[in-house]
Image 1 (cartoon, rainbow, N blue to C red):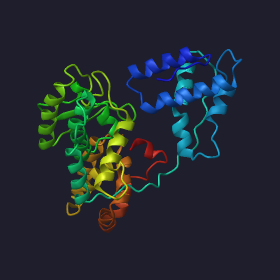
Image 2 (spheres, rainbow, N blue to C red):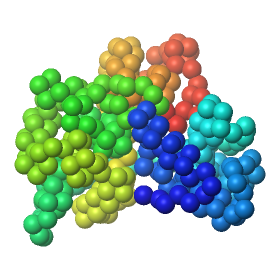
Image 3 (tube, rainbow, N blue to C red):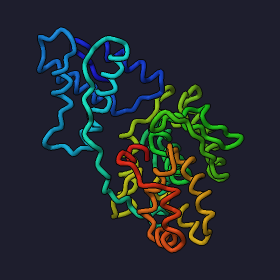
Length: 323
């Protein structure tokens, strides 16, 4: 954890406790708050309170940044200022983030052979010593990435699942740590539910009092770096192509949409179900995936493009923040 040392460090700690209690916390928030704190302590050592100049100098877009990277860096600072204003601690005006830019990243198109090799690597992990963390990794990694593959949930949603969030009788997952404030639900496939039950018993032997379903210690959860490290290492060992763990979510959406090619207008009902299960706030955000499915785009154009556009309007500029 960062050691906050600016004059307003106690307020940062209050803000962190508030966000944690509200379940609106993300791993990247602490580091960005820490860098902001360091910036203020180093450049304004004689200040006795947080000032507009401190905030503006940090939140100003840098030459080396894109709009999106600047937004990601200053998001939590803007939230911090709004938190302080609401409680009457400051009169500082929160800076307006730069306009979001449409993401041009094209997710990897997985083949079945690639996935088969990847999961073989997951299942082939060895334990080089008898450390509890290594034994937990061996049984966690194969289940964690299969959960992403079979459910389409976000990596942070999977990491931060608590043990009570999964009903191992019905297979219903309650997704609380998502983007935005909305809680949503996802139902496990029967084969995935069976695997989760087996895992639950196995990990219980290592962490009997764990809080999180995929624990990093009894009361902690894995950080995003854990996901990146394990996916990159195992994917690189199995395949020469480039992919990321988040691409698995795109794959889930595309595979589902591709199954609807011959379903006519029944696709709309299925699109609603997909949108809800993936945690999209509205159906417009799910429309994004149509750009990744050429076959479906042709069907929509040939059936009733005007009608479809009436049902699903253009994606808003900040649409990528909701995916």
